[in-house]
Image 1: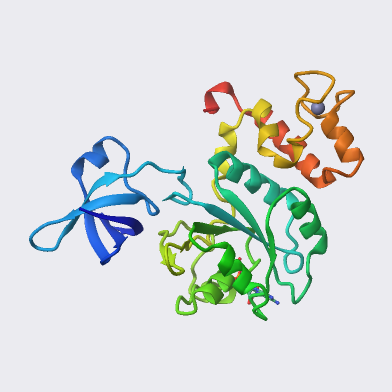
Image 2: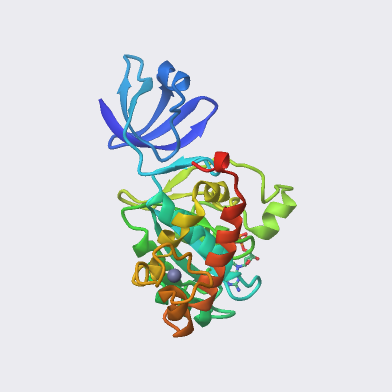
Length: 293
Ligand code: GDP
Ligand code: ZN
């Protein structure tokens, strides 16, 4: 029996990184029948037959899993943002922060293109809300070591709007990779939004980064699973105020005596965070019951 992590899935084969190197495996037939197909990121137990062919016998329990992109056990989502070419709308970060919170993974905000603009306002909003923020430049190399350090020992994935520098940062972290950056993928005629195979690249001992730059919006579908009443718990900066409103069923929108909106007025919660909450609350209220859970 060997233990490992699936780092790549291709035409029915799974490639498992084990202590003794990469093992090409087939899945046991039963996985396909019971719907629990292996995903990249899965921790597995494999056996090897006399011909050196591997077989996945067991999937360990997952921390989380996503359909778009298809990947499991993400420890950290890295939202890559920029404040120049393009300017990232904080709403996009807030939406992913809810998804990360719901999936039980860490959210790291990477403010890239610091050589053009340091994005101090975005930094203040998100450090204030309790998230780690790393300022980087794929151009000058600023912050790359700090980013690498933040990813140590984790399986992480990049997300963020197109053009912020996800591919460029991947190339900085993994110099041999040559992920196509904007200009090149256009030349290759490779659409930025086509579904691609996810692959985990090793960043050193027990650290992996998923190659998901094509996924500008990580699992937005997951938002549908969050009932509007529960959205408040996915805003970690609201936590000190929840339970302190006048009405026990306060939705923190415009009720009198709301501790959350008072904290916004007092500058303890960023206005943009609360505005995103309102926007997501309205969206969530539109989902039918059968769409939830
Ligand atoms: P992606 O769509 O998020 O993968 O973004 P890319 O990595 O393809 O980068 C988009 C464009 O921004 C490319 O022309 C990059 O050369 C450029 N770029 C990426 N990072 C930086 C940076 O830190 N500073 C500057 N000035 N340009 C960058
Ligand atoms: Zn309230």
